Length: 213
Image (cartoon, rainbow, N blue to C red; front, side, top):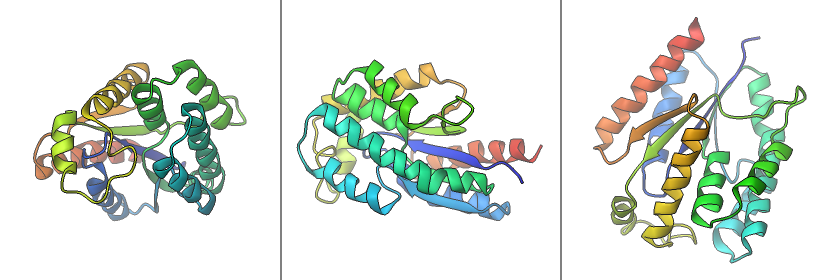
């Protein structure tokens, strides 16, 4: 059976990443691939309940990080690993990079502790860690993101954070890219939606060509 493909989409709130995931799914479907669309935190009934707690309830930073990884574990076991075993394409709106960016960068939580949790939750039988094969990072200046979010729905506790929080989150993503350069594709999300879409399509088509070899 053909090996599955795992792609995550990352970026601060307001970067517009969610808008483009459906288009990426369509590109893969046109290529004859079965696609699973999912998100973090969330993706399973238990993980969605944890999502509501994390997004709306005040809590200690360690509690927040633990809930993120608890939701991720359920997501991996119930959704992501079975889909990859079936040879499907998993498109995930955020994954572990977001935890390092938001909890590690934004909250200032210990990066090493997050790494320990990552190894515990994402360990595979062969000793490696489950990571996305590719990550699309929609990089955006927090001030631009704030302008976009000003007319959005009632913000959750992350979306309502000040610009300096998102600057720290952005720096967290940049640090993560330095740590994992081979799987990151950075996109300038300050461009028009059409230009961003063109960049995403170009990147995805290169991955499709690579998977066909």
